[in-house]
Amino acid sequence: MKLKDKNLFPKIFLISIGIFLTYKLMYGFYYSNQEQNYTIGYDLRLRSSTKGSADLHYKYIVNGVEYQNYVVGDNRINDKFIRGNRYLIQFAVDDPSVSKLLIDRVVPKGINVPKEGWDTPPEILW
Figure: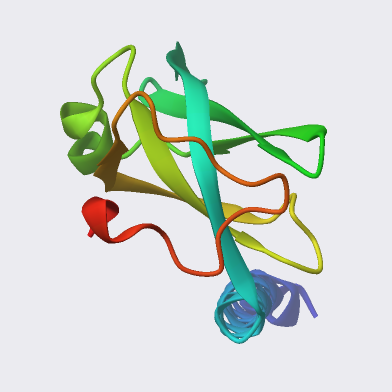
């Protein structure tokens, strides 16, 4: 019976990884099929994470409600981040707390966004 117990751990581990990957894929598919609008992210800050990398935290406002989100330590994003810049944020219309930072899209000062966000961002941002 002890031999069977030793073989149980790898099976549970593999099943757990499979469940996690399935969840991530389904969540990504769900989010990409939602109606999305765009707004401006501000107050971006790098914060050290427990894994030794830096997470990029940002805030944005939709319909007068402030949301906060972050990008888990990603050197590609952190290298492009410049303190004081404003960046384009893509968010789900049904659940504005679900968002994505578009680090390649810097929003110049002087551009204001409607309360509900843009259906499509202004031409200048593409």
